[in-house]
Amino acid sequence: MEQKEIQQIQADVLIIGSGPAGSTAGLYCARSGLKVIVLQGKGASRLSLDYLVENYPGFVSIQSGELLAKFKEHAQHFGAKFMEADAIDINLSMDPKFVATREFLIETGAVIIATGRMSGKKKMIPGEETFVGMGVSYCATCDGPLYRGRKILAIGNDEEAAEDVMALSQMGVEVRWLTGDGQPLQVSEKIAADLAKNNISAEIDSIVSSIHGQGRVEKVVIEEKGEERELEVDGVFIFREMPLSSLFGRSDLGFDHKQCLITDGSQKTNLEGVFAAGDITCGGMQIVTAAGEGARAAMAALKYLRQKN
Image (cartoon, rainbow, N blue to C red):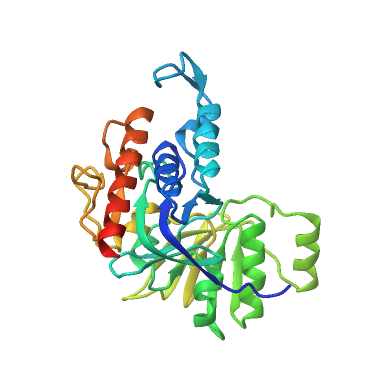
């Protein structure tokens, strides 16, 4: 298996989130002739739960999934590019700004955050958030080379996790792999064959109870068949979507006591060229208000880019 390389791409506006706020922002920005990328991550929009909506103007009633598809199609019609990828690292304080996914490093002039609320994510491992960037990683391609010849623990139970574990092994990283959920490995026959060919296997009977260290990751506590023991490691690679609290918590963005992203009347955050819309701002928590905020954030981003240029 060939090692993946990070590809660098450019956009005028990058939108993180593809719900009503993100799709509307994408529509407005793309219709203005800008190059727009919308990151459609693994964290599903509430609309994808497919319930009946009776309070969105123009539709007496419509299934939420159908409405979400219409938002996306409208934005794509004007040229917005939707990418199925999670943001795993960001640098929002500089110009241009950079957002990394597992496969791409995106350079952009402006960022609109429309991820929805930060609740409802998978439960984090105790110590995980403390050591993000200091031994805890979510991206093998980004951080794997830093661990060549060192011991790491990998956690994940899907094909992406399997591919990343193989990539780490090819980089010369000493990997111990846990599925993390007590379930057999969930991969295709081809991936299973590749793993067997490379003598790579996943442990299903152990889970990570906590992550520890002084300043950076030094050890983990593993629970196996009801018993706990310590394992010294140099890093922990967790192959699932990065918790938003970790992603944005290191970016100097301003949040209030309810973990709502603070914006002004035009959806500007406290960082220059960074805007936010939808449920992450707690601005109404309705589809129509999310769409309205998405439009307002887009117009503010367009004005910012015009003034900058």
